[in-house]
Image 1 (cartoon, helix red, strand yellow):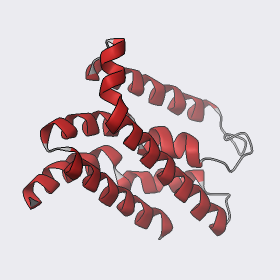
Image 2 (cartoon, rainbow, N blue to C red; image 1 turned 60 degrees about the vertical axis):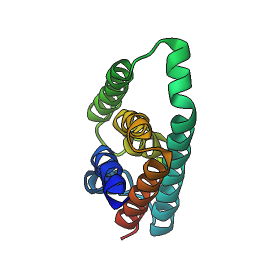
Image 3 (spheres, helix red, strand yellow; image 1 turned 180 degrees about the vertical axis):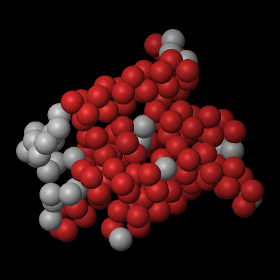
Image 4 (cartoon, one colour; image 1 turned 90 degrees about the vertical axis):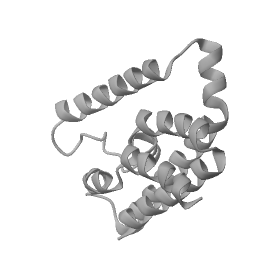
Length: 151
């Protein structure tokens, strides 16, 4: 039982990368007040949770209906991340976020926390270890992200 949990936990941990997310979060939240940082962190985690749960239950159905493979989804997600990174690199200076401190939903919740790697990992893990262990590992990993953001 514990082995199944860790079989699910490790790929989700690697896909979310809570340690790497801290640096990105601090960059996004550099001009935000402490209260706003906590609010945006909570919003990002909640968004990632909702997207991940929806994807666990509906992802494979949607993929099958549209004829999309996991590899297609990973490539498309990677291209979206590339476009977001390119936009960030080209918009230098204080206005790179459009003067807004609202970053909790996009880009933090989706695609940084709940990106293509996490969503694909969740689909594979549901088939491998079952939905219970997959959801448990998701919740524990999101709790780790929350701890990392709030400390």
